[in-house]
Image (cartoon, rainbow, N blue to C red; front, side, top):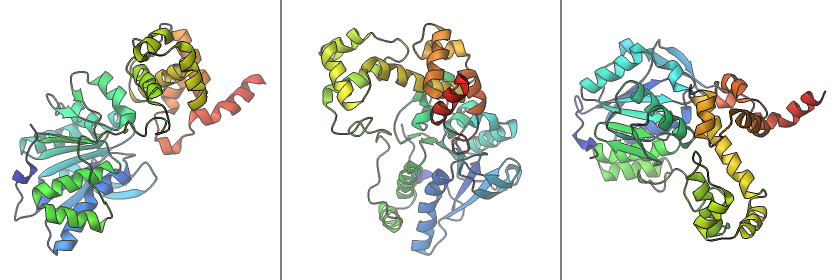
Length: 348
């Protein structure tokens, strides 16, 4: 059952937020979460909320977009009602005994723990999500499920499960903050804050990260084609033949080929292979699973076939992508953009 955040205790009427950021954290998600509380203070002319930004060592920390944020060391943190962990690319590289200890101590003090973007990875590594529902940014869901198969993962914008809250990040952090603001103060103040920051409609926690009416190909796509895509997405590891896909949706192979050619621009078998490779890429760059394990998890019976298909799609082999992909997205060249250059180099 979700915890009633209105029961969170605040010293002297001030709710304190400890925001722990990891290297290459998502600045947008972090500030989207904090800003409704800032606005609530401003609109009421009262310090309802106070926060500090923390990191393990303190000092200036660089976000994934290159911006720098001044932080205080973890060992100087004041007691807080909410401990928020904000991380993005490769959170596991920055998990330490000091960070896990800080979060566990916060939990012992009955603080509510919140993970933004990939913050759920950090909470799970610290053993603080056992028996709780959680969510992460959709790009990292496959990796999370492979690493933490016993944690129930949802594809919602945010999840509140007792004293654990996880959020997909981005603009969803604003939705979550407004929800918390309503529980901690009032609907009127939450609505006023939403108007002030031009958030016309607060989405509920169970809103999907990728709405079915817009993903992946837009509203003009026939429903039967969307069903075919959903069947493929549901069978990425135990793959189906095209005949089996057609049986699921009640369409002939010829009709399916024609629809994919018209709306997708590629044959259904190639589209199916590509979405399996997209899943594989997340596992390559976000987990330490072996290439053989990733090949199987992505529906490839042969590691040689997997490596060849991976290079064809992304322009480099998975072993090299594991090294080059483990830096923030904004600072690396997306492999697909290098395909022509790589091909030209290989032809010499």
